[in-house]
Length: 508
Image (cartoon, rainbow, N blue to C red; front, side, top):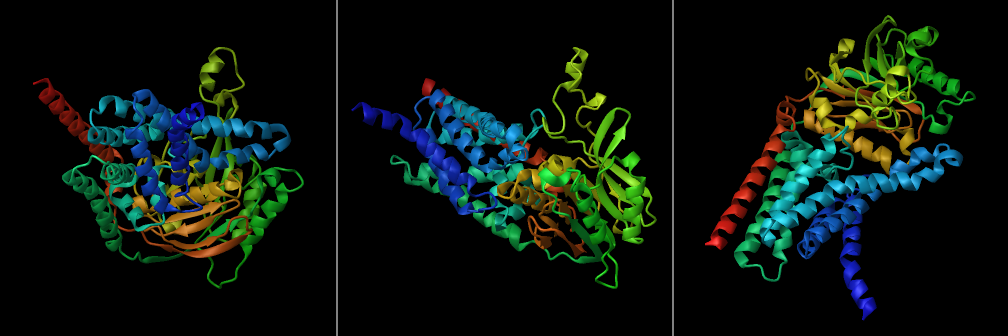
């Protein structure tokens, strides 16, 4: 009897964890997107049966923890670069990351159960609060929208809705389409209510195919970009015995002339030049000589006084530095320590970026000239995860350009998920994406999200790829996240009005 009671108590939590794992399987590299609807319906049914707000909150936290643990399993990889020193931290990092992000979802579940008086109102309230939780996850503190719900649809026709409503709008649409299906399987559901519960899913499918059917075929610019991928493993990248081998490899790839027509731009990955910019005259001359009149984009560290910057530099056809961009959206604890400046005021100087401890943030999103290719929006690594950073640029430009070092992410899920997020940014903006990664996956992605060509993961090489032309500005590129936020807000007001009307009717 006791064993049966224990099983009954923990069974919903186990099922919630399983649902979270299934939902995460929709992400790259598995792309089992068809598991998302049953996973969301299952968690909706468990939510309605949770009994109390506290249990609902814990259920949502378990569900979120399982989802993020699978989705962000790559977070352990950096700790195994030097496993003897840091390997023991890996499980703690994963647990804290998954459990911390799941707090947003758990809070939404608990509040939705608390304020929803009927199953229908609870589902509607959960849609609203879960959507707000995803906004909070993307914006609060420095934000971390990795494994956003919209990412599940990246290889399906549904992804084309990103051009219209963006990732937060697509997350709202996903929840609004899937969670009401929970009411269809409710044993006490009236026929009319069941039909109304299916309607959002039908609209979702129709809208996805409508968006995909209206996608034009992009034209080509006639320009060619060379992607240079040295494939430097992170444990060797800065090692004195290997560092110049990788640099020479990039020089060799830059100098290759397999085609009589030289490329119009050569792109190296993040932090691909060993010295700091002010000490790299010899290396920059070597790069210019190898490029033989072709402009080069490269990743390099830059110093300004005591401050350090993770930067991108553009060498024009004469080999002169014609522009630089400093990464502004830095990785907390990876590139800087949060509140390091506050600690310095208290006499603890080892965390202060303005004293050279970690990187300093650049000015913000920029529009940068890349010569004959026109203007582009530069992104360094992690910045491509944030759609608001792309929309925050002072102009649209002709393309997006991301340089990154995904060697930190290992060889399993991380690099593939990072690539999918780059594809999402291209669809959202209707702009081609030039993406060059140290260990891969380097690619040129068209403005509709289709990969023109790519270099595989963990492969050294170079690739000359034709650059597609941009599409007209998308709705999302004009409005950003404000449209999705207002939609969630209006839905929340409508749900509140329904709740108020029900309470008033009951009081009479």
